[in-house]
Length: 242
Image (tube, rainbow, N blue to C red):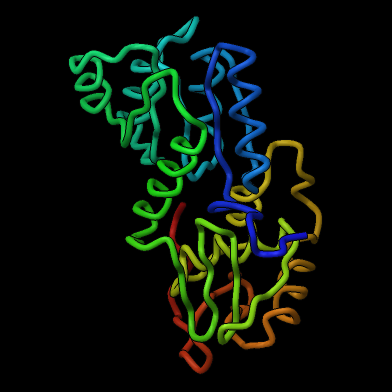
């Protein structure tokens, strides 16, 4: 249960591509504890495939990978039109390597060794910027969600959410004002092992509505869900791509 202290950063879906097994495990564990759904890969070919075929909100990518190096993986994603924010990890700390990374399409860069808190903070910033948010606090009518602390409140009163409820609300608030389809929610919020034919999204939406107690989550029949301030008109547009 999320008491509001620290139940999740942006609570979305991430990919970690790192060949050091111990470091891979440490990063995945830290991200999962922060509330993210996480997939991982240990070489460039697997990482490229997952990044090319799955929907992620951000990717942590090591440069020195076996089978296909990280810069090549990133360049191929960008050439294919993949716009997912990418945080590069590398043991190299020369300015020329950083320049190569950014030229390949990286959004940010962390040199090893690093503090896990820095990785988390940089990922939060990448996800916010990709969704068009400058602040760590998202708001919709009386609902406030702080991506740094994981706190959710309605009219100043804290709301207690489970990690899945928080993850769902966070994604929809990052994309407030547009229709988000059920399939998009499933693709972005859950790892590969999730049962994608289940009705858990509908269940979580129902629970969220009851806990929030305000009408900010609209069901757009046949299309999906829309987070908007109470009383706002429902748009007629189709869900945007992801």
